[in-house]
Image 1 (cartoon, rainbow over the protein chains, first blue to last red):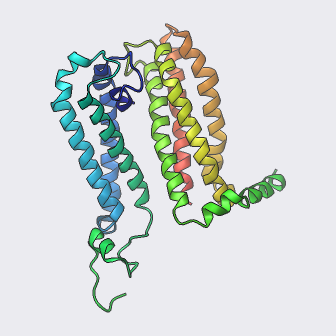
Image 2 (tube, rainbow over the protein chains, first blue to last red):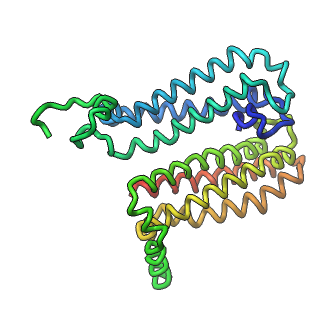
Image 3 (tube, rainbow over the protein chains, first blue to last red):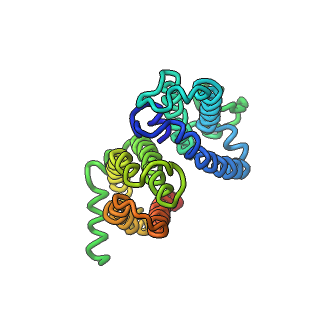
Length: 143
Length: 158
């Protein structure tokens, strides 16, 4: 919802800082819960997840999301008082909003796709590209 | 009830939509992915107002104003959920019939929708000063939608 505000699509009469100050704490709680439970899930089958293509992409997407959050808060958000009441925020904020939606959507989708075994290492033969992406150890003569 | 219901579910799974999805490797995951993204939008829309009702979040806005601004997004989210949810159901209707989590979800969902659009909407528009009525409304909404979401996820653990 905050990203929609940053894009100027929704809540245009709500100051942008209201979202960052009043809603973000809840977002952080949600993220903390996801992180803790996610680590537990990973711990249950670490090798399987480590070699999962979708898991790897998900981690990259998480890094992208985190980078975007850090850049947003250390740069354009520093000057939020200048654009707080603008129905449509400046471009840097809008870019942050788009990247955020894209990155987190990727996290959600790839997270779901981890359950699919399409590119699993133990389902050889796989294309070389997939084996490289998943870090599969394929020995000659072993099925 | 079973005599009427099971044949209906069998018919559901015999539809063209159902067989198209079943015969495709990627259709179900794609539709389900959109279902999940819609869930993100639904969750955000619902929680924004529920938190406000319970006295948290965007407290500088009136409840009615926040409710009004969220409404179009809530409607989009519900539409997406139903539009993707129906095909997902059709493609595995029989499995759903025998799945307890499915029944929890499919009975709680109309409850959650009715509560949101008939009760919560009215209370939000009233901007009541009585905190406990607002807070109770928000809490009930959170519980109802959480049950729907959790039961939905549990269908997959069959």
